[in-house]
Structures are given as structure tokens and as C-alpha cells.
Image 1 (cartoon, each protein chain N blue to C red):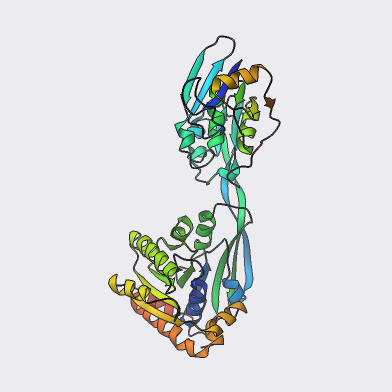
Image 2: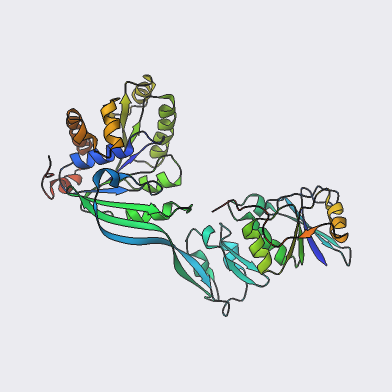
Amino acid sequence: MKIVLTATGEVLDSQLDPRFGRAPWFILVDTDSGDIQTVENSSGVEAEQGAGVQAAEVVSRLGAQCVVTGHCGPRAFRALQAAGIEVFTGASGTVAEAVEQLKAGALEKAHGPDVVGHWA
Amino acid sequence: MRVAIASGKGGTGKTTVAVNLALSLPGRVQLLDCDVEAPNVHLFLHPSVEISEPAGIPVPVVDPELCNNCGECSRLCQYNAIVSLSTGTLVFPELCHGCGGCALICPERAITEKLRPIGVVEQGTARGLRTVHGCLNVGEALVPPLIRQVRAKADPEAIVLIDAPPGTSCPMITAVRGCDYVILVTEPTPFGLNDLGLAVEAVRALGIPCGIVVNRVGIGDGRVHDYCAAENLEILLEIPDDRRVAEAYARGIPTLDAVPELRSRFLQLASRLRNRLPRAADAALQKGGARAHL
């Protein structure tokens, strides 16, 4: 399974960034092959609005089936849901630890946004 | 001929000046209330509303049959209002600024536009004046499109007074841009001075001549007057700090009806303004005769 995790840096030891749309890095982990890919989210960090929406597009284009982050707002959730991507919120620690939390079933699958939007 | 009444600081008396100036100018006068988040000219003039139209912004509608998910629309959109996902293209109308770029760039012509209502534009008449006001729907964040739709009703034959929103950000710029003259209303307080300085900078950047109205003279200190002298800004009118002005305002009565001795000051403002405007304004001032009540 391909997972995208939101991170403050570009290595597995980086802290998980609790923000989805404005996290500076996305780390794609393929749990089957062990491959890792990092993507800088500069367009999200600098977005005037809709950072979560464009982040969902990035994740969709990476071919991920699942997002692990801290929080997810209403528009990002809607876009991820439309793209058929599962969302797991409430992750913490390092990116590597969050992968283990997911594997151990310690993270709950989100059925809706867990924070309010920044606009409207 | 378009004259905006603006201010950096809110609550300095823009509407008071706009309403009383409109009532003091002869000829064909139109008053546009462009403070669409809190329009209040109608509270003083009670216009009969003759035309009421919904106002909105065009937002994209994607035809999933035609969309091949190429992502051109999403790459173009600076506001992330349209996204191309692996499963299709998704629109977030509340983020859309209505530029129409996505519909133009779509190679498959899969995008059409529909109007998303954001408010209403009402036109009416009061005391021989034509009035137009915009009122934004509660919860809407996009102010400039509605201001543009109010300004689109400007009568090219009239002296058009624009009651602008406060501040120096997009709404104020949208209301002021392209005007022939700007009246900046302030009060002689530290806040009034600070925000006047910002407004003067904004208006100068737009290349529009401006003059100053100082309201509530008697409170605060002399620094606004010092600033105007140093910056070579003309003080067109001073309104004294008078409880009767505030009482009339609170009751929705134009100042010149409630405080007769201020009538001559507003007439003086009208004639000063007339002298600052290009000669083309004279034609409008001579149309339609004098105001009935003056």
C-alpha cells in the first residue's frame, strides 16, 4: 500500500507535521516494496487559500491510497474522498513512528474532517 | 465624473459626508453605496427600491463526459478552486474568484460557467438622488466582485459619489480605482492619523488627487492638521465634535437636516469639490436643476 505522510522534513526521522495542506514535505512510503519518495509541498505552504485542496491533488497524483496526518479540514477531506484516498488523522511522533502506528492499527480512519476550514 | 469618499479608519464619517454632500450638490447626482459588507446609506435616505437584482460570480461547472482529467484548469487556478484528481475534476465554488480562466484554457471545452449568487444590487431614488447599493450575503468572503457590480450601475452623465468601504485593502481599492477625485475622511486622533496616512499612500499610488475632511474636530490633538500641512493636503471641510451630529446619525437623519448651521459647510464642500473636478463635471452639475429641498 502507498501511504503519504505529512512531515516537517524530508527523512523518515522527521517529525510528522500535524497540518495536511501546509506541511512542508510529503513522504510517500510504499509498505510493500519499502520504497520511499519525498515531495516538497512549497505550493501548499505558499497557497493563498485552498492549501488542503491542492495537497489532495498532489497526493492523488502520487498514486497513494492512504494519507496519514494530524488533522484534515473539510475541503481537503472532500477532495481526498472524491479521489478514493483513505485518511488517518491523529498521528504523532516521527514519520517512521507514524508508519508503525498505522501498521499496528493504532490510528483511526477518519470518516469526516476533524477541524474546521480556514475559509467560509 | 466619479468621486469616492474613503477613509483608512472605519467609523470616521464616510457615509455622513457622502449623504450630506450628495444632498448639497446641484444637478444630476448618483450615490453608490460600495460598502457592501455594511451598507448604510439607505438608513439616512430611505430610497424607494425600484430595481433589485441578484449579483454573483461565474463559477465553473465541469462536464465529466468531456473532461479527460488533463489538469490544465487546476494548474492555472491560483485559488485552488478547481482540482484535478485521479478520479475526476472537482470544483470548490466558495474558493473561486470568477476569473473564467479555467473555462478558457480547457482543451476539451468541458467547462461552462454558472452564476453563484453572492448578494444583491438595489437601485432606487431618494430626494431627487439616484441611489445604488450592494448587499453581500452573510458568510460571503468575496467583496470586490459585488463592488464592481454596484459600480457598473454608475450613470456616465451624473456626478457619481461612491461611499467606499473602510481600510486600504482590496474592497477599498476596488471602490476607489478609476475615480477622478477622492475625499478622505478622518478624525483628529492617533488612530485617525495613522490610518489617514495609509489611505493617502494608497490613493497616491493609484494616482488620484485627494482632499481631506476632518470629522469630530475638538477631540484628540492637532497632529492630523500638522500632517495635512506637511503633506500639502487640502482640508476641504471640518465637522465639529457636536453631540447633535451623533444623535442625528443614531436616528438615521442626515446631518444637514438636524444641524442647520452645518448646511452651509456642506454647500461649501460641494462648491470646493466642484472647483477641484475637471470642467467636464459642470455638465452633470447643470442637469436636472437644483435639488428640490435646497
